[in-house]
Length: 256
Length: 376
Image (tube, rainbow over all chains, first blue to last red; front, side):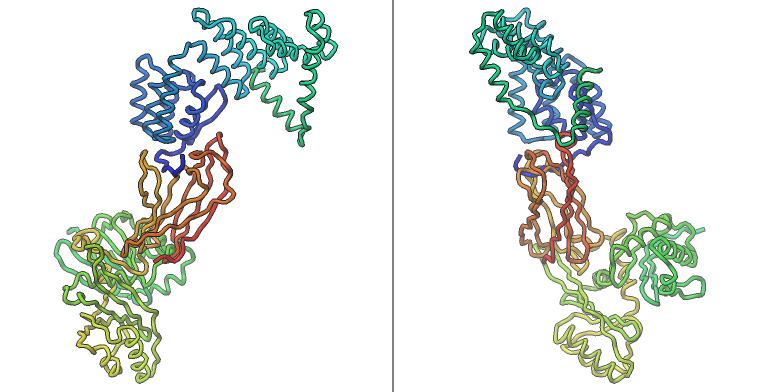
């Protein structure tokens, strides 16, 4: 958006909470920005009566709230719900709104398993690892009657493994990477599994596993070299704060 | 009991505050000194005793209440149709004080107004016959040994009748009659000189023909018609109230005075999905009454561009305000609050605050202030 744009609606006193990622929005423009950049996350947990009530009571967008209430009286798509909001506010600009419309149409045409997987990816990016795992597992259920085969399933196991890694759940990580390796049958998938074993068991464990699986020593050396190249993270200036933040994020993710 | 329907003008200056009323029912009007019962009021004393705006407001409200009682007004909000108060010069503090006094009297703000002497002179002349002002009018207002000149000039701008009113700094006159005459004559020379005026008025206490031989010659030069008239400003204030709240005879006439903002300020921005000029400050209103508050999303540049155009000339120029230190964010994700107000007759201050974009891009809290300067 190159030009200034007058804000014709007020900011809310009480924000709307997007619970899946813990984001509070205070204005309709923030809501639209979130929608534009997180199409994969849009579902009934966000687009619902609470949102309509918030727009009516906090933002005083009464006419729009009435229109959306009418949309909600029948089965509706994400596109049918969000486009009226974009068109009411004209944010960010008409050209971008047309592109968003195209993206929404493409998303509707995708198999639901793919949409759910993308939802998992978005949750992963926001650090919501448990919710991401739930989404990936749901995608696995949804793919049963589709043409999506082993390669899609293999990617899902890989991503579930990555989410477990972020939660320091190394047993689950190794198990998922193993399943991914079996389905994808690629060198990258094999290396990801070996990397997981290195994390869990160290160099000795990696060597034992490679031997038992008939994997050449050059492969394991390459995996170890890649691990070294990652380097050691810098110690945070405020270590205590860093640890507190990490623990909080962990509890938020796991509900523990 | 008969209920009045009065339009009021009040001059609250100096040692001789006055009130002028116009009765809508009887069509009668009169100007008289402010009295409480049989006692003339001296506002200078009252304001000296008051400390702070609230006390001054209460003093003024009490004064009006008593004066209205003298008129026989019992229900002020119902019987006062509209009211204008005038002062020699007005500032924002004075406006706040008078507005508070009106609140205490329970007269709705929509039925009240404050203006300075220049504007009251305009309101007085605009209600006179055109032949008294069509080539300009002059006023010399005396308060004892001090005199001030006011000018009324008519013209046209973009098919509208445009009246410009202004004043010069007052002149203190010596006590000695001969010196007084000479000093006043010099002041007249410097203000109207050999100019052509449809009329010249003299008002207030302090002028006497007995000492003004030289002055009279200069006043009456070029065939100028000179009139003495009592209570010009309070009558003008009452005319202003009649115009604003009742008769509206001067629709389409624009008045520019030193206290009127002579230019428009706006920004080109997207409004309702379309690029448009968005007015922030509209010329034609008093500087002390003029403010603007809005919020908008910044585009891709870290600067604001204001479009300034003259009410009279229509000429336009841009004033750029840089927002140095604003955090980097994508276009359309910086919400800014803009507050504009006048700190003086010709100086408009723009204050911008970064409100960020909620939790997506937290506010930095930075503010920027810029004076848009003496713009003509």
